[in-house]
Image (cartoon, rainbow, N blue to C red):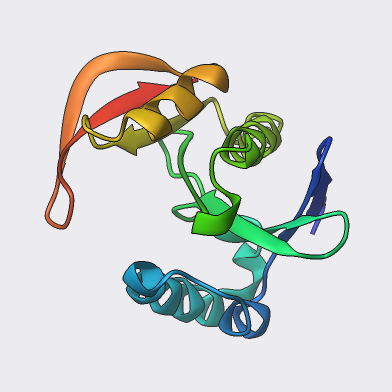
Length: 155
């Protein structure tokens, strides 16, 4: 692969995971279904590592959360990014660091023109994270069967 699979931020290290590595990481119980889906996708296309899940750890090795994309960019040349921080690490700016690192990595890929994130309107903390990471609301909404109407933000 021609792109880096490790990213270093001020306080966090991000590493793109293989299917096997992903199976060994901690996920919040409400997100285990997504973890299973990501494992399946990585097993189908192991070369897509980097386009799915990245593990976020502090420099001491403690896992603080994860983030990633919804697969390779398509003909529309855009990525959708997501992120999660374990409850005991929230409120410390880790989500902003994860989102910023992933977004900058995605936008540095020659096949990507745009990174977007979709967030529930009542998730004020996540909306603030996106704003601090340079995202702007498009005025569009997207419907998700699990989460309802979501605000679309882009960078």
